[in-house]
Image (cartoon, rainbow, N blue to C red):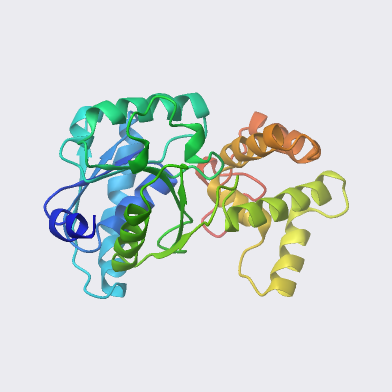
Length: 290
């Protein structure tokens, strides 16, 4: 596999399925050492925004990566075109298990036999979405944080993933300016996300109970933890619909978790307060100075 990564990566494209917030950022990072990245999304407007985002940020990110060289991010109009000849396929679709299971079943048939198949899911271990996959040894989780702002990426086996594949992929991620971490065993929420989920959940509880409003919680959190953004500002960046999907998955796995955070998030979503992408979440983003 090491020879494969060294010899084939420059010659074959990587494919990203889903051109939303995370898909566009993953594509940006994979395009920092030359080569081609294909983006596929059924929403034309989403893809257009992703390409514009990459074009805006790629020069600066390339300059920050040792040996960096700007690659190409192209639009694929079909799933078949996206994965043709790809050496790596990363799924960055909504957190819906049935959707991911179906997609991986298709990838098992459509992608090259030696292609690595990865999911960016933050809440579903890849073992839960490989029911329709025959070659499970090439499937794993590659959970990206928020590149290029945060460059950590967690790798986790589906239970049958080739160990050498994971180690070589981790080395490749280092070469494109990312910071890889390999989980030693399967965990819902991986490492960082599992810890961060507890922080988000408790912050939502504090707000839902009326102990303090989101802005006060964020200010106190930033001052005491030395961060520039608090839990509510960060949830707005991710999108409250995504935050709810993740939290509902945790609640299904751990029934003892409190309901108040999900109730608050559902109310926000019903008011179309999704965060930055809708112009309003826990904060108002409709004004440039907000």
